[in-house]
Image 1: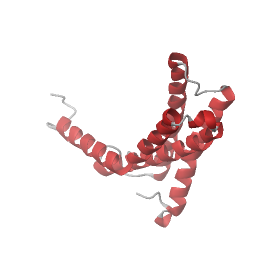
Image 2 (image 1 turned 180 degrees about the vertical axis):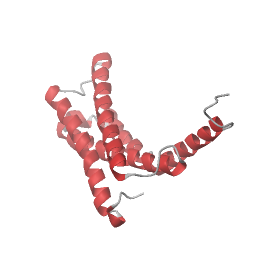
Image 3 (image 1 turned 180 degrees about the horizontal axis):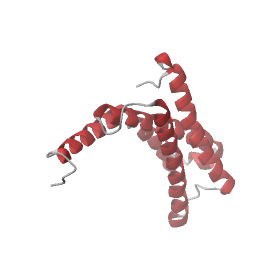
Image 4 (image 1 turned 30 degrees about the vertical axis):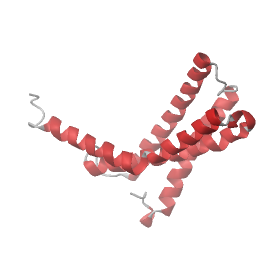
Length: 158
């Protein structure tokens, strides 16, 4: 038994974590899943990125928007079930922005690994990679700004 925690604390944490996963999956996982499905079908099914290389630009922007939406809902849900403290606008914005930026970096890592291991050509050059990251981050920022400005009382919609 851990002397710093009350008995049954592990069960409460597991319950909160389970509730958070279910809520976030229900509320927001559909958005990045849908964009990833569109990306996969366009890429593998139609070779759309080879036919229309500029398609990469809106897709990275849209990816940033939907992953920002996902993290936005995940953060709000984590506060609602008690995994995070009460909602605080600045903390929320910093958390979501940092997660979106991190996700864009890891997406580009995945593209690099895919190019290196499987011979794909997702990354044209350094400029393309940096533009992809910028577009994802800007997409995330646009979501946060629009969400904030459109929310009642100018507080992020929950």
